Every structure is written in C-alpha cells, then in structure tokens.
Image (cartoon, rainbow, N blue to C red; front, top):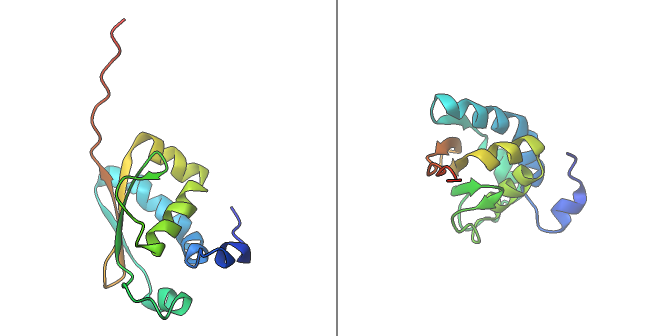
Length: 125
C-alpha cells in the first residue's frame, strides 16, 4: 500500500508514520496468539508531524471487522491507524477473525492485544 501526500492533505497527518510501522504492527497482531504485545515508538516522530497536538498522543482503539468498536472521533492518531489497517489486506484479514485492542500510552509504548470474542453458535439444521 502506498500512501501519498494526498493523505496528509486530507487530514491524515499520521498515516505516513503508521504506514512506516505497518509491518511491525502486523507482526504484533500475529504474535498476540501468545499474549499481549508491545513496541516502543519514538515520541519525536509524532511530535514532528503535529507539534501543536493539544489532546496528547495516547489513545485506545478496539477494532473488529475493520471498524472501531469504541469511539475514536476525538483521536486523529487512532483514526489514522484504523485507516492504515483497513488498507492492509493482511490486517483486514486478521480483524475479520478476531477483535484487537491497539493503544498508545504517554510514554509512546504501543500495545496490541487480542480481545476475547463471543463464540459463534453453530447453526442448527
């Protein structure tokens, strides 16, 4: 997937950064089979993209089937992450099967965990 300066122009400020980390995020998603995963990101990368960010950079995104399961309307960072994940065939495939929680804390530690989904009842024929 190739994101252009057009994405940044339409308000997708963090898309280039999430695109850069997409391979690592996919590895973290796959590794959640062994439990929650984390990856330390660099604060200067976020701050250089949006130095005037007033709300802070931390967020929690719960996603399943390519859609946010919690409200992320006040988090551009989370919206841009979801945008990048939706555009990834591999991430979309993983999110069709399982729900994931992605979070970034104030120390810029990015965490991914698989959420427990309700078992699907077998269809009675």
